[in-house]
Image (cartoon, rainbow, N blue to C red):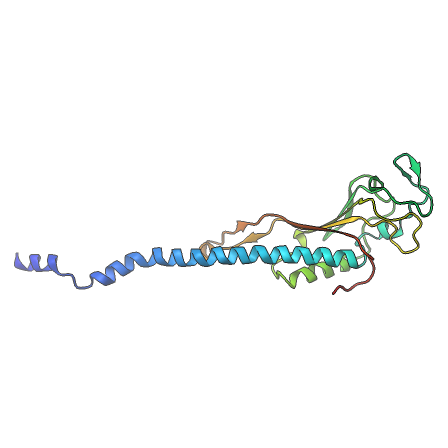
Length: 207
């Protein structure tokens, strides 16, 4: 009886048992704090990558060769026929969307010639520029759209004649927290987008 009583009152090893009970919760809290900070950092990287992707897109060759080849002289714009030197109205161009597989007309009107380039080298160069800021970006998650902006002049010898609004987006991105990595579960990230007006639209490099 005395031995049972002594065993009951024995507190040796209590600290180790308490530590074992508290450790999982403490680690979960610690990794949770790290995950929150890393999540915010990842969002910032994606935002910056999207911004620099848009910057790259407006100062290098347009992804759709049809935009570069299209002439707007003789085209109808708001009921009027455009002559050389006339400003190209916003309604002259709908929406062209480009991804890793090519370009297509998402909203008319679009140039009548082939919208997709012969190769996707220019698209991959844009994606590689974005990966400088967020290496996890996959080519399949990047979208580039061109839509009318009301800028540009018909017959401009410096192609393309039109200066569309260029939007670069990253969709379907995910973030894998440390706390969920053993399960392979990722957290969906919001879509990222940034828009700029096309500048020279010529060349293959960007500062």
